[in-house]
Amino acid sequence: MEHPNRLRPQSINACTKSVNTFLLVSTLVATVTFAAAFTVPGGYNSSGTDSGIATMLRDKGFHIFVFCDSIAMYSSIIAAVALIWAQLGDLTLLRDALNLAVPLLGVALFMMSMTFTAGLFLAVSKLQWLSTAVLVMGITFLTMLSVILIPLCTPVTPSNRIYRYISYYVVYLVILATGN
Ligand SMILES: *[C@@H]1O[C@H](CO)[C@@H](O)[C@H](O)[C@H]1NC(C)=O
View: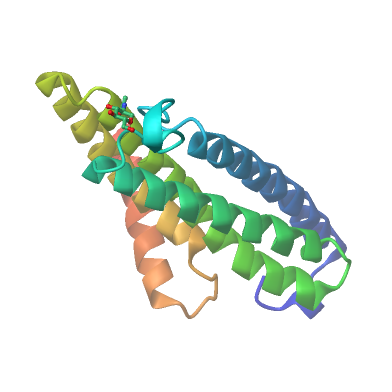
């Protein structure tokens, strides 16, 4: 992606295909996180002066839920708009839009997962062992997710040493895990 003016027709085609895939994913993330905002854990109070106010308003987990859901929603919307720009047919625009949209989409996916963990944790927080299990699973899988997401979202340039080191260790770990 670093020399868009020298892209061959095949790679332009591949880029257009991945733009469509990214657009689909970011739309799905936007849809899900939008819906989550109005189906919050605990729901909304339906009586009295607090009618319409979230019942878990004072809960720390709820605050995490609200922040993660908002960040996921807005970054996936920005990614979607950038990807619509990417479809206008200009190669420099395609490269810039992908450089903006892919990291934002990564953030959106990560925040959507965190929203899930926070919401599920809130829902089961009265049962100690289950909420601990949800938390441990959440932390484990979010760590795994960030390991495979960060290299994907780092701008790809051959001289980017961080990218090369991380991707080297990711490939190494995958090879180690599959036992080859
Ligand atoms: C709803 O709000 C009222 C006060 O307006 C309060 O007494 C009641 O406990 C609340 N219900 C829930 C489920 O939080």
